[in-house]
Length: 160
Image 1 (cartoon, rainbow, N blue to C red):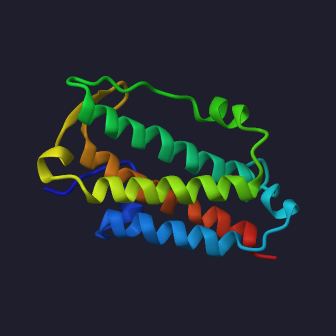
Image 2 (image 1 turned 45 degrees about the vertical axis):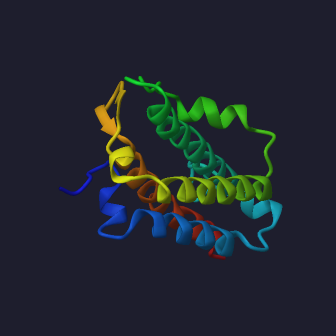
Image 3 (image 1 turned 135 degrees about the horizontal axis):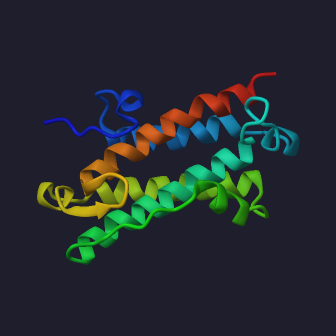
């Protein structure tokens, strides 16, 4: 049975680990040579800036990678929700290039982590307050789909 997440449409039938690695490279390529003004440009009126999108993606890698690790380490792990807008506001001092570096490093770390898991580890469950019982595999499939959801926004900023 296929794993279904809120971002399954974006991921499609791609291998999630391969997609995570390719997405990290793609983000680096999109943002290479960006000026401070590009990092601070919103992708559409009233929307997040490039820096905020990159920070959000890095924070999501951090939070969801941690959830997967905790599910493997703690029986009956209960994930906690987080407010993405509050988290973004807490990282206001992070520069655009630092956000790219953080995202790329965390995505690569998570890809290596997930690639080393056994099928039974990937099926380990946890409870999420919004989604109910989810697996480590669910997180694995959500992360690259989430990245793919935001990459077009970065591409919009990159266009002159």
